[in-house]
Amino acid sequence: MGDDLAQQAWSDEQGTRAALELFQQHFDGRPGGVWAAPGRVNLIGDHVDYNDGTCLPMALPHRTFVAVARRSDTAVRLVTGLQTDAPWRGDLAEVRPGGVEGWVAYSAGPAWALREEGVATTGFDAAIVSCVPVGAGLSSSAAVECAMGLALGELNGAPMGGDDAGRARLAALCVESENRVAGAPTGGMDQAASLRSEAGTLLHLDCRDGSVEHVAFPMGEMGVDLVVVDTRASHELADRQYGQRRASCEAAARALGVASLREVADRNRPEDLEPLLAALPDEQMRSRARHPITEMWRVEDMVKALGACDAVGAGRLMSQSHASLRDDFEVSVAELDGAVEAAVEAGAFGARMTGGGFGGSIVAPVPRGRASDVAHAVVERAQQEGFPIPEVHLVTPSAAAGRLA
Image (cartoon, rainbow, N blue to C red; front, side, top):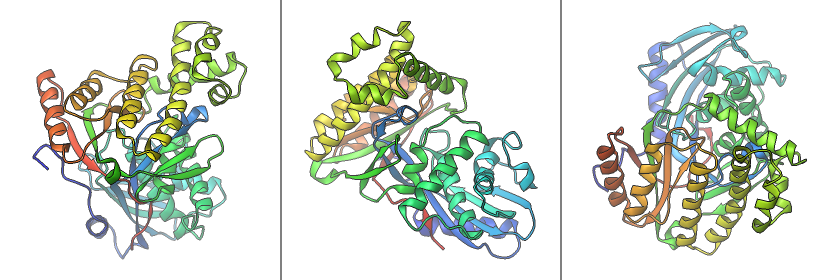
């Protein structure tokens, strides 16, 4: 596929072996098992989850693998395969809002959420390895949360991976952990995608009631490959900008007299939107409200485009989504915009930033066999602009989190 396509995801065997080897290097005995959870890419529907909207994420083949052992005391010992993360030693009492931070908060936070839910969680040893790109807007945080949540629930007598109801419950606990322990004001899309997806499909997630439908992504019939470009621009969901966008949406909903902006999308047609937004007090609030409302409409149009195997229409919707995120919601950056432009110029049907923004990745459906052309184009554009050299991944909709060993 060309030198510009990054090394692809690990197999389950590779990830399991790496997690077990790391565990054996740092801890005595054997773990109680190995669990894995995928990152996600959102085909369309960003910044709608906390507005009660719908979105279309999918699980990536890139996964986080955790080897975990239950302890008889309250000690917690964590180690990751990243050289930047020093091993952590602490106690369950420290795993709480305000008690831990950084990667430890994401990795151990599910233990706090489970305990708050009434699960008698003990201490644990955990070795964590991952091929989910970190800081790329591909939900590396949700992947570790969901893998650890599955492991700790099962090891402490409260398995939640057996059916969709249990997985939905665990997803909600992982969201609570990320919000409260890690301090990131995210919605629930990432955890739902990691825990509730099915291979070969997109997850049509309704963030108002948590219901899901599995929408076929007929890549072969559409004649597309799906490319994800990690621009390697800095990306931090806990940044105050993300919280400000969420607060603006909530303020707009209050000003419009609705519980959430989903109600505006449900009750109105596109031609009615601008007169409605004119009632808001300033242009910034109007722009902040416009994006999630129009994005919800685009999600539903995307479902129709996929059902019709319409690659051109799907690409057009994705490009429209990027323009909305860039202009109305103002969460894009130059690296993302350059990658989108380069991908489309190289023949992609469309392209958009994906995730929370302020850095991270783009996603683009490209004509089958043209992924290398797009990879070369986005790398060349980054070099011309003096940006970090991006990593380009070829991805397919993959399976949800589960136990591997």
